[in-house]
Length: 431
Ligand SMILES: NC(=O)c1ccc[n+]([C@@H]2O[C@H](COP(=O)([O-])OP(=O)(O)OC[C@H]3O[C@@H](n4cnc5c(N)ncnc54)[C@H](OP(=O)(O)O)[C@@H]3O)[C@@H](O)[C@H]2O)c1
Image (cartoon, rainbow, N blue to C red; front, side, top):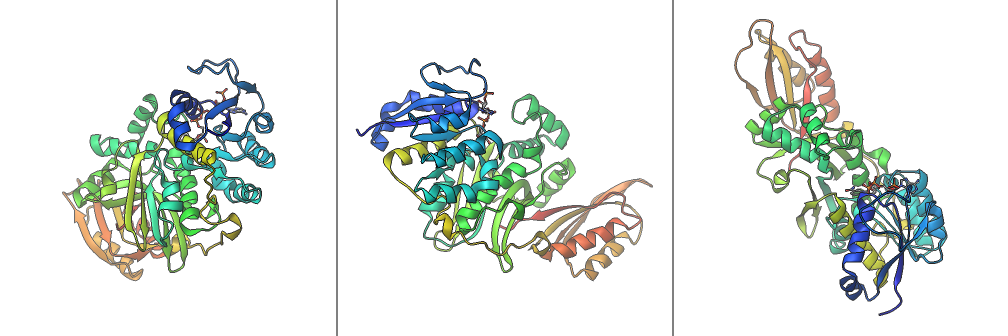
């Protein structure tokens, strides 16, 4: 064996302790696979005395993560602190400045500063590993960058947030509303006390920017992502989706359109028979559609100590073995900005649910608005009759329509006197 790879780990929470455990449990296997011993020499976190359930006394301690980056006994820096700026960013920049490769699980950081960090790292011939930042244990970064590198991609999409997928699966199975399921998910530890990054789609959007960059070789551009979360998905819509042969999933989608690259995170209705519709609970999945390979799908656990550590250590093995690939598949200097197709130009079919008072002529009024916006209805569903003064749901599936026309139509429909609640719209993603 050559000399050991000296590793410094900053952040000893769920992921950091998972990585420590993996590295200490199977040193022989890892050495065999990379040709070098992987040894942790230094660690950093906030509280030196916290019981982490794992011995850290044998490692040099740094209160300041930047100090860990400069530690001469550290060859490679593992950033597992989190956050798009602050100590995580300072640590990565210091590591690169000190000529050390970086491995991180931090999608928030890369979604905002990924291109700059990749440029800085590559200028010094260093790798910036982030397998753990997207879909946890699923090796999708390597798959897009290496295994599928011969393809041009038309669309890459996935279920990238386990919390949302868990909540939607529970809503589907128990027919309860979002708030009830969220509260239960929080009590079980599947959702954070402040769930907004997850349920509002931000976390999935962070991850999507990285997949987009890998698939389309463009700079990471978080501002270009249209983001919609799952708070407005109701038990009623889940029940209708079921009746119509769909499942509702929070999808993160990057797609090549005639107007450029479309990037969006939103609850979508998808065919209940499609493989990705069966990815339930906390599981993640990514589908990549390449011109030569056709459709590929990857699924697995998207978070948790074990799966995330598996991805972090895979990046460390590459570094130990001297395998190096450009961060986003092409040299960072060659990442080309691509036209970005805004949500208003999105074209697809829509599910629309209205709550209307049951009186003659309502449907004709709704149909007239849609006709004026050149939106045609594929099917319309109205069950039962409302008691006087009560609202009854009317559900429509449209043919392909442009988002801008749909938004105009829904705004007009919402103003009709017989329409008693704001219309609900969920996009249908054709697979
Ligand atoms: N959890 C997952 O399943 C998962 C999956 C994929 C990716 N990730 C990503 O992995 C990263 C870490 O997540 P996590 O769940 O392990 O977080 P976590 O459990 O909250 O751990 C964060 C760690 O960072 C340390 N830390 C915070 N501020 C610090 C500072 N200023 N200086 C030094 N250390 C500091 C904390 O120290 P103390 O312990 O002393 O407070 C803690 O050990 C995040 O970027 C996250 O998005 C997580």
